[in-house]
Length: 70
Image (cartoon, rainbow, N blue to C red; front, side):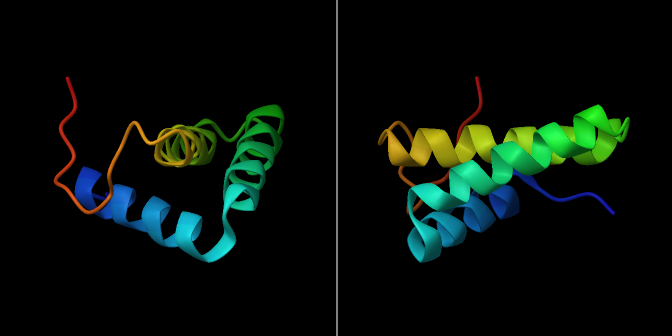
């Protein structure tokens, strides 16, 4: 099952709102766990989610606006 970019950003926004900076920490550690476990697809999902969470925390992404990827 694929997830759209907009849905992924919305998920990151909801996690950030609910858990603050802990959401990034959780996503990053989950990424590392899947990466070292050889689960590349799952690792890629959590890596992308961690990048979005970091961008939301740094105010580089406003989750209330449509996401544009360049």
